[in-house]
Length: 276
Length: 164
Image (tube, rainbow over the protein chains, first blue to last red):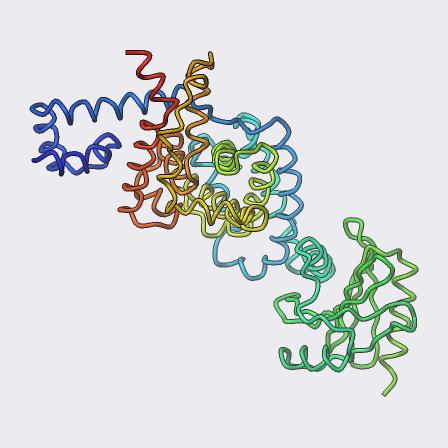
């Protein structure tokens, strides 16, 4: 091996990235060439200094906790929304278990001794399993899914897929993506301007979602073409839920606005929707 | 978040600012959650570092667009100005560690990231190639340039000479 080739592979050699043959041939060269041997020694010295003198920045205290709180919130919503899609393909928390297993060793894992796993992993594990159990229940729970969709859209700031206060824009957009054409009314005159619409999957079915504003609040209305039995549930995780039926249509409103506002809103909506 | 520490360190070295690093790691963690399906156990750390790196570049293009343009590696030789050796500066009693850390921080972005991934995270060339989305040959040449820059950095050279 000549010096040109040696110089170009000394770095890879130092990094343990050379195959056996190249390694042997370079080592033979290093034994006979003082210049290249020095280059190699310099690289090793640099590595030693890099690893001892350049700080490895530790995450600041509190960051982990803040992230965990945030992730737990986002995770619950994400999972609730995707539950139907994911379920059946794989265990919903399998990847997280894998990730955690990679750190703590899967063999050590025992559900009831999670505390022994050490701070972060154990906390995430508990949160994820909690979310997964919620998911399983949410699958058949229309209200929980509707609330999750609302929260998720709010967190993502992606409340509307079609932004328009014009019902003549929103309605065709939704109709083109659904097997039904939901009634769309603007209620700006009543203090509930139409902001737009989006598609949501509820109980495995694409569902028209109309988005209205009320002061600083956002109201999601899930409109479906058939009447549904909806459990009497007015408050899910701090969000208010109102349900109504009109001939041919089923309405489910979710918002952080107060219950009486939500009831009033639905009343206006049904009155308008009844108009031809 | 098993690899939060590694993610934070990478973000901190790329952004060179503690607050910005926190923002980037936060964004990366949310993204990681979103794409958790693509996680495979054997390379969870490289996977998360990839997300942190991408979050950094997105953040950088929003907040410091000039930095990416400047640090694409083309202007790399300008990073080490051998005529700029300042005897006063070299004589200042700073700790060696600070000098080397500063030299790393001043490496152009494209070189800094491969160096951090290799020397601090011990990733293989293959993993670095995947994280930084570059061919393995480019990983090798950037690493080699990064090391040459550190060895040629005026402050380091001054110390090395003084020490011999």
